[in-house]
Length: 434
Image (tube, rainbow, N blue to C red):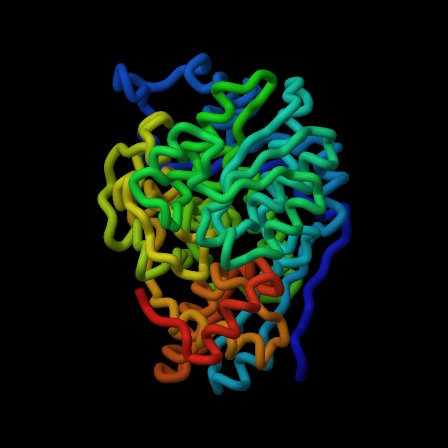
């Protein structure tokens, strides 16, 4: 038996985004102004975001309508398929049933366009002419480059230097879609220059790249900032993943016991997990929801829950999140999209309340799982999403040892076809755990 696919039609693309903020049993602590330490207001945020995005970020509404033009672009790849990993089950000799939601079907090859398209749309509606952002592995940057081209907006990307060098094809994809890309830290900003003056060989970090992007925004006319993870509106845009998976699991005639996603800033995990959290909080079933992060950048499992800046220079509002400290520089692992010092406030809050679990996986174990998946299911997964695969395999082996059927659902958030150099390094024994 080969993989079993559960597909839907374009009419099944969600018509609303789901906002977990409305269903928390305890309210999420608000962002604070770094100067006054008071909750930020609309005017504090509109210097960097358009007002319509800020309204979404602060919205207490459970559902927010998806604009028709955004749904129309979503239809280029949505609904994404749900597949059952029968060959992986067989290789593991497990009674577990393993399902994965495949977000690599998007034009950019990951889940990131779900938010990039929405943010580009709202910026165009607000009259923005130029959007600046950061990117780690390049999946967010390439997704925003694509989205801004569709809406006629200029795009500038500050890409973490180590990934800029490790993943040249991500940079090339951004160039193909018309974006301007700078390795971060760069000489294009005062903060980047300061970092390079102190360490000319700095590998960079998402925190540094965010600081550079914000500095660029604040000194440039008709320019706004876009973030690919962490913030409430980004997690909300990604909820289309989990909403579709609920319908598709019904088509499969099963309900998951365990839902798993990788976690760096939190958008991927939020996308698959938050709609299932809604069902859990409503008493439908006590699902286990597991966020999997790198052992070398473990904000949930080793970080502190406290207010911290989202960037290295301390320019953002203070966010209540699990953090390793905004000046933390993660090791140069290949899962560049997970190299962030903090976790999304909503994911952090769910962890604090005991709604979700978290675990950390080392890089070599992650690549071992990725190769196992590629050699059974055929798809080569991105290093980021391979953290989830590693945890899935652990759960499937545990089910075998307990001789107990478990239904496992995970988000395969992107393909690894632009990450093959990292696979080559692993296969030639050049990778190590940090």
